[in-house]
Length: 358
Image (cartoon, rainbow, N blue to C red; front, side, top):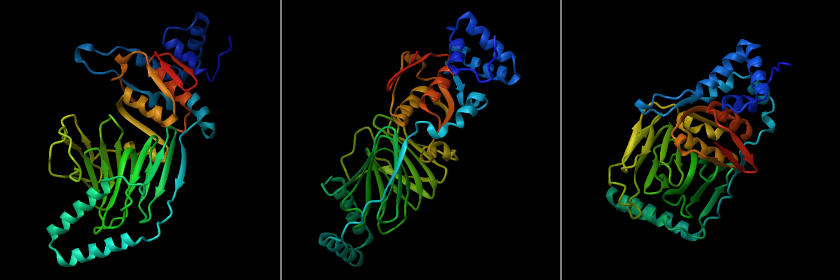
């Protein structure tokens, strides 16, 4: 029997799942015995089948990326990365609106207020303008990405926004008059041109993130945990007082996030801070890369759904909390699912957009 140097990875998956025939099993074992590197690759994946100590109630953990990176399959398929199905990227620069009379009057009014009233009155004016921006109008600019695509836009003030897959961004028609308000559902990276006289604010659910001269990412998919990570500068994160507040969000003072900080909204409505995080792990998607460090499998599956525009279904919900370390850069969805299934000792089946793991 000929020993292949680059074995079919689906055969490895069948072997790990105990579904390989005697002939297929012999082929896998002969392949592993033919080269110490092959043996270490097989052992790395076979380790995923070991059952954890249930008494400790710790979810099983798998380093998919480490096993994949060492394989000859990965090196061969990396050379075909140009043909892999990855999120499409388009760039859009919106045209600048012609000055409107009402905008000019608003600017004159703002200037008059600055001259004549005290700072507290100016804050009241700003809050009123923020409430005004909350009301959607036909003149608002809407940007959307679908599953399987990313987008990058640049606003009239030079602020750059990278949008992840399945994201919606509304830019207020009053943007740039006295404030700069945008409204996000999904995930985006903001590189803001700072202007202290015209604060830039990202509204997500009941919270608002206001830049203090910064580059920051916001993750706010419906039904998922809100995350804000700061790459440069600082962000003020607090309750959005310009609209009625949900009872689940306590009225707490704004929290300042600095470079390297991660802010997350927990189930009690409190903002939890983590300092010194690896920012690239949270923002790598803007450069076409997904990275995970001991992330729950169900969260990874949700991201892959959006990233590749597929429908991945786990037949066994008990593995949702399995912790996985992996990265995705330039690989096709078939490559990713094959290696992930092999590492977890699962079987994978694909029919069109639907991918089942069991």
